[in-house]
View 1 (spheres, rainbow, N blue to C red):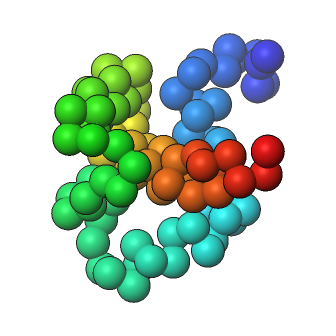
View 2 (cartoon, rainbow, N blue to C red):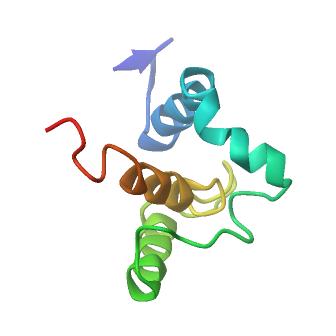
Length: 96
């Protein structure tokens, strides 16, 4: 894959996909804006245990760390998104 002769790296691909997320699932983020807190602060997991939550945050921070191109996945709220998805119908296999 290339964009105007440049290779598309993982960070730019994921950044583009994350930009589409809110447009496709605004209702998933509605409680966040109503609470007035950022995804990285003040969220208590509903699906994962304390140990699993610590691992998930560490894994997200390791896979996409903060650098000169932008914030880490953990800072962008990826662990919270995963927790909300797992607590919902998808995580409980409601459609199976």
